[in-house]
Length: 411
Image (cartoon, rainbow, N blue to C red; front, side, top):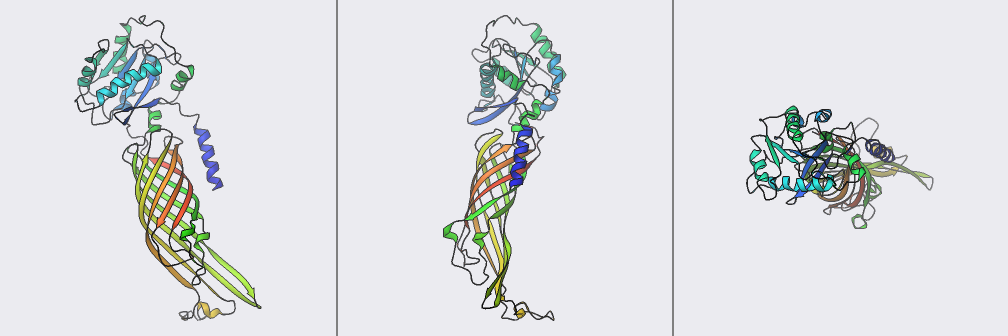
């Protein structure tokens, strides 16, 4: 447990300086929509023209290209890449894409103080109906548009920006409100990939594998009178280990499968009474197999979540007490079957168990995360075994996880 804590501590502070935030989210009709930003000028950002690129589905990497190549644009501009959520950009009235782009323009003006009179929308044939719809909105006559060929790449965007920005009169807004320097620095820290930055925040279509460890503590209403069959006290076992697989269908909702193991340590106690040695032995395992759903409340590096699940629970224990000189308790020396009077007994219980969990995921990097949670486990009642008649317990755990498919396209 202590070793896992030190690993988490080291990863948090070693990764914290590696990722500069270039990806952001805004809420559009109760749905989180993402965008990333870059600039052709890493020295100063305020009062720059704004370019919004409506790249095609699954073409973010080819449209964004290399961070270094944006420096070849002849004049400073801020470039934003909003993420498409459906099959492609949709200008249908039922779609929220036009609202998203309109809100994005306002958001960028407020956050980065771009030149509100110099805005260029770039799209292909697939997205140009949306481009035109936004341009035709009241108060959007100053927005310029450029249509590129299908599957356009970074060089075509650079060329289109150069043509547009060289024809601009950039003296319109002489005294814009300058943003805080810290915001400029946080976006334009040189040497880090914007595409990786937004993937650092995305959970959509990702799968995760994690291992967790912690304490498992039975509540008083689960503890029964002493079990004199196996002489095992399960309630004294607190060391818990679990393995979990999660599949995120969106940034907020995931299905998970969890295998939990509560080891019941082997015991061997020797008591002397009246000159006779009495030996008590035993051990066992309590295991759970739970499937359920997780819901995360928002998408950031650190985000709280709740989880609900249910599945089968199995407990197998063995133990007994015998006199040290009574070897017949284990059977004859010739290897034959033990006599019916053997004091070494086994008990097993099978029941259903449900869990409620609350915790927080902390994204350490694009592929690794840690998690902290508190879980309540509740099973149905069963016949006393190992000094318990149900599993009703509180658990506190810490986990380390690996993210599969971290390089998938983001939305």
